[in-house]
Image (cartoon, rainbow, N blue to C red):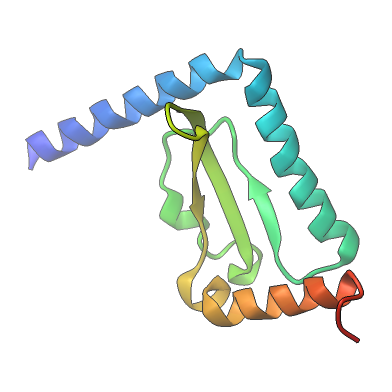
Length: 118
């Protein structure tokens, strides 16, 4: 068990270092800006769910955030550089609330707010 915990701590430290390196990159700031715009768009449209951006808390117990906004929030963290897609991150949501049913509701609300359905 000790080896497993040690391995997890090493991986967490590696991810934290990757995120710290990325913070100095102008594209990192752009990625944060795009995520914040998504959050603002949901808020302005008055939609049920929202995006919670967690940037600085890289190593933490993410499962404790699954009930944010009564399970309708999506928590995004660990934003770091990726060799294939430029950046990658971890997104966490409550599976039964934000899952298929919650996602369908949010999509319907978004379509209505944008005028695609009446």
